[in-house]
Structures are given as C-alpha cells and as structure tokens.
Image (cartoon, rainbow, N blue to C red):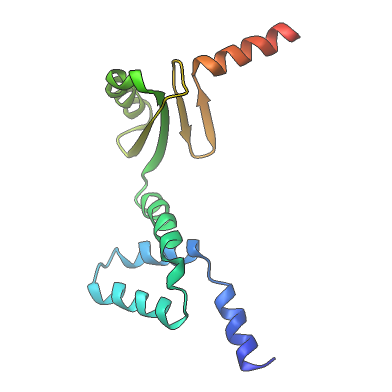
Length: 138
C-alpha cells in the first residue's frame, strides 16, 4: 500500500464525533495550547470543513461527559407561560443535570412533545387524536 493510500485511509477513520469526543476530554485540562493544537491537526489534515459538525457533536459529547441529559421540548406558541412549570417538572423527575431546549411550533394546537435521548413523549393534542383514531379502528 502506498504512503498516499495509507494517509488517505487514516484520514477517513476520524469522524466528527471522534474529534468532538477528543475535544471534550481535552477541555477538562483546558489549556489554550491544546485547543490550538487540535485546530492545527484539523488544518494539517485539510479537515477544517468538518468544524461545524465537530462542534455540533462536541456539544453532545461535552454534555454526556458531564452527565447532562439533553431534553428537547416542542410546544405551541401560546404555551410559553406554562414552559416554566414543565421545566420545573422535568427537573423534578430527571434531576438538575438536564439541558432543556424548548422550541415553539406554530403548527401545534396544544400539549407538547418531549424528546429525551431516543425516547419521545408525545403529549400533544395531535398525538392524542391519532392514538384515539387507532383505538377506534381496532
């Protein structure tokens, strides 16, 4: 195998997720030179274009490394006043180590959807109507 083929093979094995995980671990010792070296490696490998994906994956890895659970909540726009109550209930059930990402949806009539990792809790009016429809068809 030629040197070029070996180098190409090496470059293909490092995914944005792996870079993000390495960055999350390195930041524990938090020296500016480490971050600078990390960016130099990306530049040398001509992989700076991966930086946006690395940063996206890094956020997930950083939170996982810190034991923080990402909770995504979709709610109708008129539901904003109840978001504090929902946030408090989520923290009561899941603990304080959560990061709640709340996104209003103009298409939702009422209720909310909560995604925790791979679990979706659909407490939306639309979801309940679909469940009722499925039960009535049986």
